[in-house]
Length: 219
Ligand code: C5P
Image (cartoon, rainbow, N blue to C red):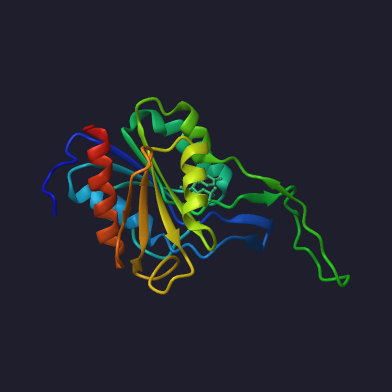
């Protein structure tokens, strides 16, 4: 516990998956549990920050004290974040946002018929990339959950989305990624420096992220 080193700071966190409807009873989503994002929100609160948590559908309780806005789709998360980011000093984008949504959502349940069914998908807004363009002096932190070429992909995302730091997360490793309570990550900063963390609780990872954010902020 780092006492109150986030006192006076406002932190916006996105967490969880998004859910993209196919028809009234079906959706496309991913295995994000929300645990990592919720841990970041909780850690920031413990350190005295004012926290807003924009969360997709998850099965865990939000940390007491956060302003919580529940969203379902990527477009909803995008709209909520874009209307509120202006008030925040630090934005940590932990959500596993669906890259695509259905081009059109069926109004009625799709009936089983032929051997094949094709869904047309269109790209969702990239919230982090959009924020990267307008962030000004705000600190923007993203995650990069990968199964291949972890460091290369993470470094590319850091640069292309204009982030200050990216948390590279190899989701194939035991003790890392979706659903579990621990994570194994590497923190890569804009200056190219890198911190490889051992397997840690998601709370522990959250605090290390916040340590580095503060050191970026304080130069
Ligand atoms: O490109 P990729 O989805 O792997 O980038 C991951 C990072 O970008 C995460 O921080 C995630 O929260 C954010 N992101 C986003 N909006 C999207 C896709 C990803 O904010 N549509």
